[in-house]
Length: 347
Image (cartoon, rainbow, N blue to C red; front, side):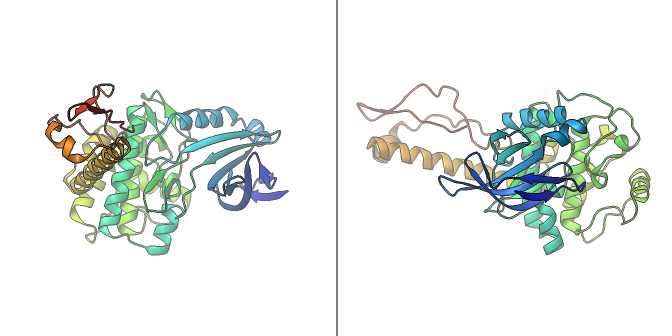
C-alpha cells in the first residue's frame, strides 16, 4: 500500500492498482483528498485520480457534500472544465478518474513565472469566464474559485476543477463556509445573505488581479488581518496593471454584490473582444474541418458542394459549448445532382 497526506494532514492509504488503473505518484492534495497520477493498464493513457477516504467523509459529516460534487461534475461537459470519466468505489476509498492536466495548476504557474503577460492573463480570464458562463447557465455556482482549482492542459488551455463547494439551484443564501479566504467576498465573511453567482464574480476578479500583478490584493498576514483588509473596502490597483484589466478588476471587486457585473457582461468587455473573436474563428475552422472530413468519407468534392452552400450560418455561442448547433440537423444538405451528406455537428 502507498500513502498520501491531505492538506489537513490526514493520511490516505491506497493500493497500486484500482480498477483498470495503476496509481502512481501524488500530484497534489486538497483538504480532504489527494490527487494521484493514474495510468490505464490497457492503454497507458494518463489520468488524474482524486482519492478520498470513505471513513473520513463519514466521520466528518462530508459524505453528502462529496456525493453532490460527484453528481454535479458528472453533468458537466465543457472544454474549460476538467472531465470526470469514471467513479470507482472500494471498501475504503472513492476514486474519481479525471482528465489529466500536464501543466499543473495556475498557482504554480504564477509562483514560477511571476506577473503573467497581458495576452496570457487575458486568455486565462476569458476561458475562466466561459466555464463560469456555462455552469451559471445551469444554475450552478462554483464558490471555490482559486488558482489551485484552475489547471492547464498540454496546450495551456484553462480547465476548471473541484466542485466540492458548489451550490446548485442558485438563489440568495446564507453560508458559513466558502472556499479560500483570499478569494472570499465580504458578504460571506459577514455571514449575511449573498448571491452565489456574484460571489464567483468577486473571486474571478481576485484571480485576474493576481495574474496581472503577481500578488493578491491583500497584504500578507494572519487570517484575521486578511479578513479585516477584505472588509475595509480598501485595496490598491497598481498603475502597472493595464488600464482595461484594471477596469475589469474594479468591476468585479465591488463591495456591493449587485454592483458587480454578470459573467455575460464581463465577456462583452472590450478587453476580451480579441479572445471572443479568436474563439469564433476557431469554431468556424473546426466546422470547415468537420465538413471536409465528411465529404472525403462520402467521396464528394468541394466543386459539387459550392453551388449549394447558400444557407445562412448557424448562430455561435462559444462561451457555452464551444461548438455550434444547427436548427435542423436531421435535414440532409443536397449536394450536386444525386448526392447528399448529413453534416454531423459535435456539441
